Image (cartoon, rainbow, N blue to C red; front, side, top):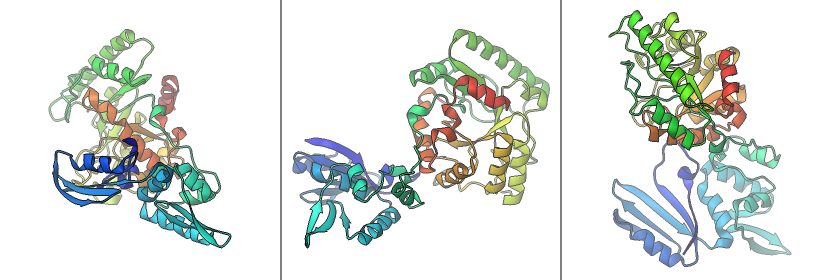
Length: 404
């Protein structure tokens, strides 16, 4: 009986954390859909059941809501329940100035002294009735998107299909790293990347542990890895492989690999993994010093946050962004679900300043490369176009950028 179903609210807007989960459905028989919804096997109890809506509590204490409306009101339902609150308030104020009233069932207008309800089966038609272009759900936070939609000047946001590569990949190559190793071989990671339609990939295992190895041993590790990657390039002709590494920025600002070892790489991703307690000024100085190395090309998970677990450290992002733009360094949007770092608010700042970004999964297993979608969502919430994201470059173009 379901014609179409969509998530609503913060889930549809792809916010980094959500509370309750809402679904909208347009159906031939709403009653049957509601009965089916409430038969969910992990339901703890029914909160509400009505002719067009229902709500239940599921295991884990989460509330799931369902609302159904006819196909001819589907567009207004989607718009109304997607939000955000501030976006919808702004729209209502705009509508009132035009003598209109908005609801989940449509737009009420006055014609010949009578109030009539105009219905919309798509969101595009709903927004058009207000004199504006359709706004992607990820942008609906009242950050200026309504003004741009009225001027027909909304950015064309990056899409998952624009992504040609993933640069932050941890394989099982034996480097005796400072942090956790990947689960799958480089070969297996390449096969997975090819299945996603990627044209190249960047391997960036954690640097070998400094405390357990001498500089000479680390250099030997990376020499063998370089030879191994060269053999992989011969094996996978037509598919690009970028030799990177995730290198720690130490508390004094130096990198955990010396210059001789770094010369064996095409470039390096740099990141902070220790001593998060430094104040904003000192942490900014530390990161800027790490980024100053000629081989440093990407700043990974820049705030160090872990959602619902760790707030992360403070950086002066005005300074960080200025330096990255000047020195042709990319800032990472880390797609790992508990990171989603760079946060969307900082992505928006980076976009406005013209700072280039990359979206990476930080995958430690081949199936985790599928997490790219979450990073793309963060980029879209920050209004990023594909031209803001280096993953859209071809392999040769990216190689050129690495040398810039």
